[in-house]
Length: 56
Ligand code: SF4
Image (tube, rainbow, N blue to C red; front, side):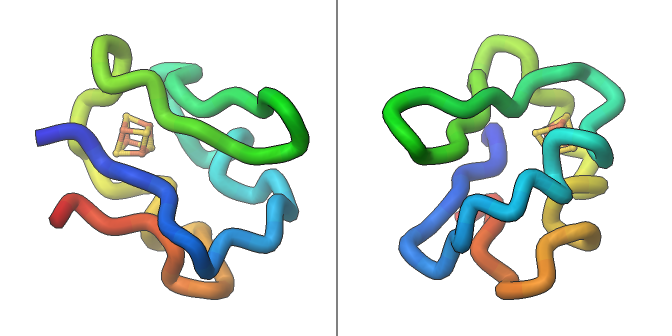
């Protein structure tokens, strides 16, 4: 199950730097996780200051 970025996201971009798989990208002013690239490592979730990233 790939991680997802929820409504709490403030688009700070901290997760982009944290992701070892370069799975997180910005489009239309929002951040997204490419499920095909995501390794489900959780690094982005730990880097997120608003706890917007979950694997639920
Ligand atoms: Fe990248 Fe890991 Fe987050 Fe997946 S769980 S988007 S691989 S940092």
